Length: 124
Image (cartoon, one colour):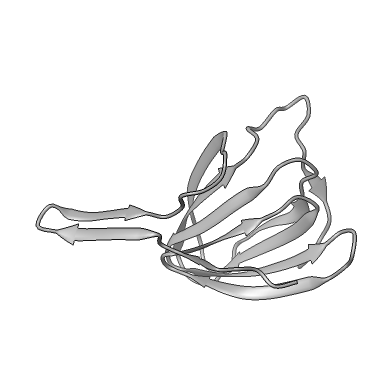
């Protein structure tokens, strides 16, 4: 399995500042943003119904994945301005390599009655 690293789809820089379109596909119900410290790890779980778009806006992260059905693995680096789609049934662990800011889109919003989050460690 190999993940396609998605670059910014459009960028305009002028005297006003910078405008970036980072994704122009998909249907999304939730938008999450955050700042993480170096060596922090998030994930080590998968979703049965929720696709994720994960984007590094500043910093870098190493992502490890494992498909829970086929057991195929992947590992790759995301740097500032890059994103990736993490599909259903793929456990993911995201380790931040430096102080980093991220944006995450989820195809389904969080529902405490049906959280769609299943532990499956990829990395300790």
